[in-house]
Image (cartoon, rainbow, N blue to C red; front, top):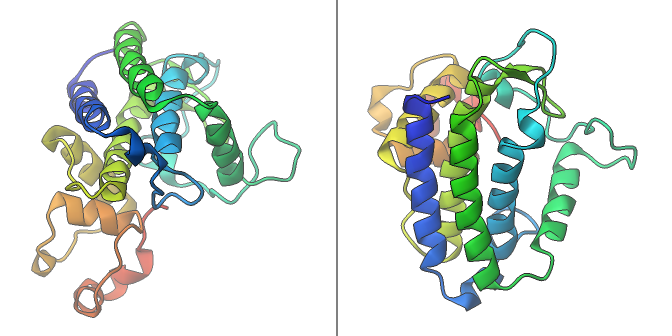
Length: 232
């Protein structure tokens, strides 16, 4: 597949690789706002998303899609994960897996692994049809094209998470931010009040619970305030 969402994702991945490549080794031990993860775990998590994107999460299933890129985020992260009988929530399974994915690797190894995973993923995406239906654990079936589009959210947010942890500016590649904002608008189900004056970064941080709303913003949002965060 190809298209604007893939191009946007490629831009965002380039931003992430550049950021991670610029970090000194000591920064990989810094805590992030993702509970229980240091920068090293977050980098490994991003690598794992990419590996699965053209691996197990690209496997075709013989069924019709039931959700789109916005519907992908209407799930309960505190619910159980399919195939896991330990009683852990979806979020806990992901957290524990990521800690294992670091596997004692050095910052240099993590930098190289992330860059390699980006290249492999982009090559793999190009060879997979957008209309293929896949089924990721914890979510209803979705077309591969819509799933790839949803990855813009993951990589914009996690690029910002790394930047926040190391004291760098939080920003998204413009094309990827456009894809993400459109998804957030659909999750909101309404139009943000123009009086908020939010740019894409502010909207994304607020919508994902990474930025607290001010009293003035709450007032301007009115009844929409109850929908925040739009996803966590």
